[in-house]
Each structure stands twice: as C-alpha cells, then as structure tokens.
Length: 383
Image (cartoon, rainbow, N blue to C red; front, side, top):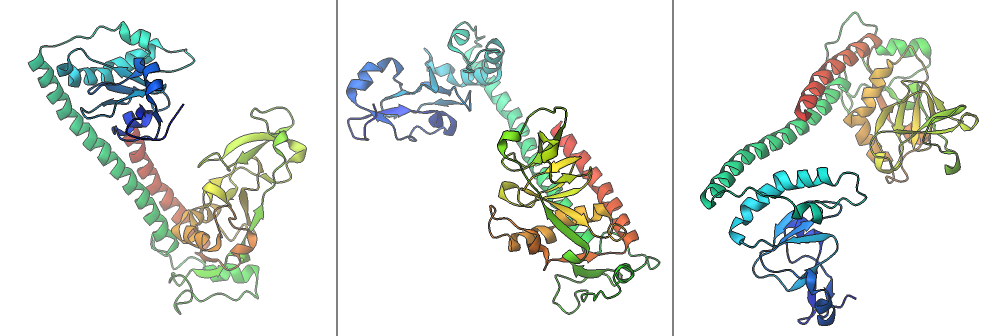
C-alpha cells in the first residue's frame, strides 16, 4: 500500500501531525491510484485534524501550503464552511464539545473524541464576529494566568523535592539538630557490643566522605547492617487477588516506583518481611528506591536491610540514610548497570555515619516534622 516518497507520492497524515502541530512529520506515502481510491479522506488547507486514539482530542489547523494527501484511521477531519470562525470553533471544541462528546460516548468500546454521530448533532452557539474576538481575547488572557500557576506549581514541586534532599543531607552530616553533650557517644555503643571494634577516623584525615560531629562515628556498613537478597517463584504461582494460604509478595520490577502486591502460595515464600522492614530496590528501573515493607514476602528485585544490633540503630534513621544523597551516590558507584544492580558484597566498603542513639531519634523526629509540612504544601498544590 505504501510507496517511497517522491514528487508524485501523496502524504498520509498521522496522529503525530495533530499532536505536534506539524504538518511535515511522517514517512508514509501512497501513489495516485491509492489516493484516488481514498479521496474521501483527503485533506485541504485550513482543515482541522483531530487525534482520535491514544492521545485523543488534539487539534491542528493545517496550513495553506500543505502537501496533498489523506488522513489515516487515527485522525478525523473537521472542515468549516466559514474559515473565519475557526478560532472560536476550536475554543468551543476544546472546552465544550470534547467534554460533552466524552459523556455521550461512555460505555463504548472505542473512545473516539468526539464520535462522528455525536459531533454532527451538536448545536453551536455562534456569537457575532466581533464578540467572538472579544471572547477569544478574554479566554486567552485568563489562560495565561492558569499557565503561570501551572508553571509555579511545577517549580514549587521541584523546590519541595530539593528541600527534602537538603534536609536529608543536613541530617546525615550532623547539622539538622544540635548535639547534646549528655548523649552517650556512638563509639561507646560500638565498644559495648564489640570491644575489639576499631573505629574509622571521623573524616578529619580526608579519607572518609566528610567530617561528622565528634560524638558520631564512621563505621563500615556491614559491621552494623546486613543485606539479604530476596527470592521469587516462577510466574505460574502469581495471583492478583488474595486467597486462603496465600501470602503477599511485593513486586517492584516492571511496575514503576512503588511496590505492587501479588500473591504466592505461603509454602513458597522463602523470604518474608515484617511490617516496617526496609527494602531496597536492587536493579532495574527502580534501582535505588527505598521502601517500607508490609507483612509478607519479597522478591529478588529487592534486598532486605537486616539490623545486626537492634539497640544500636534507630530503624527510621537507617531508612532516611538510604534515601539520602550519600547512599544514592554510592549506589551509582557500586552498581555496574541498572540491570546488574548491586549485591550484598557491594556494601562491604560503604561507610555509615552513626550518631548517638538519642540523637538518631531527634533527627528522625525533625525530619518527619519538616517532611510533614512539605507534604501538606505538596498536597495543597495538587487539589
């Protein structure tokens, strides 16, 4: 059906022409015989083409110098008898016709917006020409404010994200809350658990990532925390709804940013979590994501953080450490590729900045207090 481009070929207009507002895009052409056969779908200059599948309802007024051709099945054409009302018609189309047509077409298998039979039966209130101009000018004026608000909301969201990152950065540098001289130094915690432990220098000799307060201590990640890999049965065992004797398995891979629960027979759940356990995404598109687990199992795409000494680390402090730029940056260093990810041995050379236990709790309280304020702002932006 399609032929190579040539001076004698006719263009086939596609959805991307309407979506991108560009009549030159596309690489499909037909010969004259096929064009004559499909001439009922031919376009003319100043026709309005509308995308009707996927990204639906995008309109584009074809320019005067378009190449002769036809539309494909993902487009529809609107040809006005009077081109002078084009701007007002497009305004009405965007704000009224698409919405009403969508209501009329609910329940249909194919969502074309607007469906032909519905569009043809619509009555359009047509103001005098000068009033059309005034309406368009006023709408454009107010839309400029809406666009400005949308831009400001996007900037605010980015600022909130950066602020959270800065809060975490201050937290792991010992600068988010004041140190209390009455706190037991972190080194004493380590000595009490392991008298033979040799502490790292606190960063003053330049070998460690940065300086930390005197009451803190740098220690090897694997000396206080361990990483356990998950397990995953074959796809035959997955269920989408809970059943008796089934257990949740939190699946990250291929599901986006947040874990999605599926279900497997409980006797196959060789790796399980308790509610609140910390899971780390080990590879793939979610590499570096940090999750609080629910009760259940976890798969090979995740690693579970195991606390060797429950009285040494406040679990929420570790959680925020994994969200911080220090961990995320180190993760990029040790991960060969997103697919290869990391394994438990990769953590052997990673340092952990350990505050006194009481200060860990104060840090977490301050983080959660500040994050709550920022989350409230973010939620207000989305209303």
